[in-house]
Length: 116
Image (cartoon, rainbow, N blue to C red; front, top):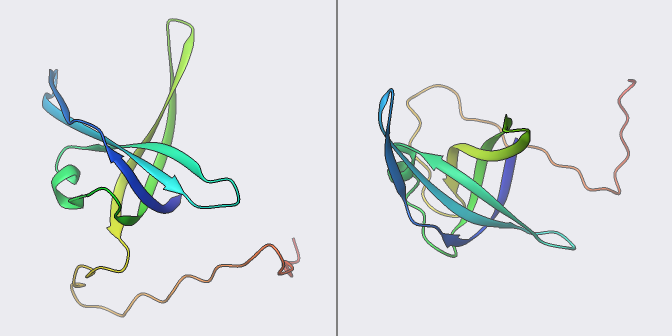
């Protein structure tokens, strides 16, 4: 799943020690535009923090996974980004191969002609 929006805030980086070694996490608030804009708190883990290089007011597209887990009969949900790309900036050079075709998006006005 992908979300595109503007970075409103960068929360402080947190780190700790786990059974698999040291871990790092930084959360950021992304405002997704719509008639009623939504704010989503997204987590970046490990080296992805440095790779993203986020700043407040950046327009980004975040590829995310959503996961919920239970602890003491309560459910907790986390939105984790596995890729973050800045919009309008320089994209990383591809390592050969065919160019990636643009993604086609449809508005609510367009009908869905799929047979299923």
